[in-house]
Image (cartoon, rainbow, N blue to C red; front, side, top):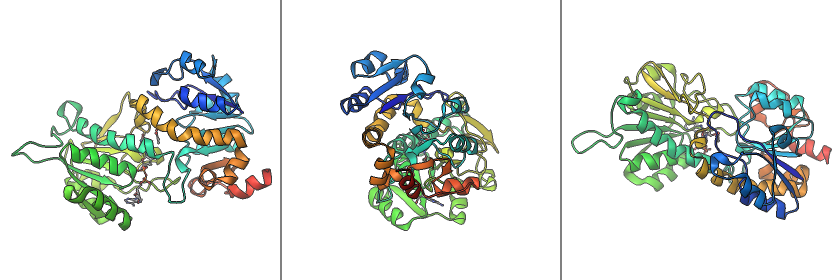
Length: 374
Ligand SMILES: NC(=O)C1=CN([C@@H]2O[C@H](COP(=O)(O)OP(=O)(O)OC[C@H]3O[C@@H](n4cnc5c(N)ncnc54)[C@H](O)[C@@H]3O)[C@@H](O)[C@H]2O)C=CC1
Ligand SMILES: CC(=O)C(=O)O
């Protein structure tokens, strides 16, 4: 199979979907890899390194997109929709629930859209989302601390306080991978951390991991309102796989916060959990202030630490890509229930229920459709 890797074009997105090691893996398995020139530079991988691993360097995005399977990091932007064509396998983060136009473009062009973020193992974990959630979670605490600084618009407090001065209060809504990693760093920096989750079993696991260094709380509107009101930093880390994020923190809750407090809405890639994060921000211009509260809503946070993120991401995506290339997408998806869950669009239909519901689109079962196409 020919596999294409275009250069990422989102604001400050310096990750790339393939490392030279990934190229080597695919080429050894008998496949051809087309890398758009300079696609890896942001992650410190040169064209020469890709060539040495067996890739062909192509000079334009169009050539990279001409392959049978295209691997990317972020969801395609409107200027990339022109490259969609019937039968193209697109393997990338898609985040379709908050993206009606992208969903329509994939359906209209009968693209096989396999989303990293909904590939799900039987234990319900999301193996192709986990490493980037680890990165974004760890960054969320760092970034929160940075924007609490007066020079960055915050109230001017240090996460860990000092002897004789209170520590900052950090609330993390959602105790999965992002939430746990955010808490690790926030606790490490000395903050007073509370994590809310809906799942009692998860709260027990968090209690086992952190012991008395954090507080755990059941997530409900009453508890969220109480915690948010007194928090210096609130981190949004909730996910319902594939679905639009629930708006758990209302505008009134934000109004109750003290001026110069900070929110980091990591879940913005699925639409965000704060009623007041009404727009996605970029690494170039990452915050805005609403009701006196600094809002950070960057949807590609790991793009800021591309070397770590590219290697972490491709460690997990490349084995799936090799499987798709070896077997073809139909056999690969039918034989692997985890990969099957990644199929969001197929043959002109939405094949992921939460995405169909978000857009009022017709839903078709991926497995049934794949068997018909086999
Ligand atoms: N902005 C960015 O650059 C990045 C964003 N993300 C996003 O961060 C979000 C979180 O991802 P993960 O931590 O990997 O997901 P996860 O599935 O590991 O954790 C989500 C947690 O939310 C909890 N939850 C569900 N409903 C809840 C509610 N009503 N109240 C409180 N908790 C609730 C679940 O029980 C689960 O523990 C996702 O939207 C993901 O795509 C991930 C990486 C980068
Ligand atoms: C998961 C995601 O949105 C990212 O890594 O950018």
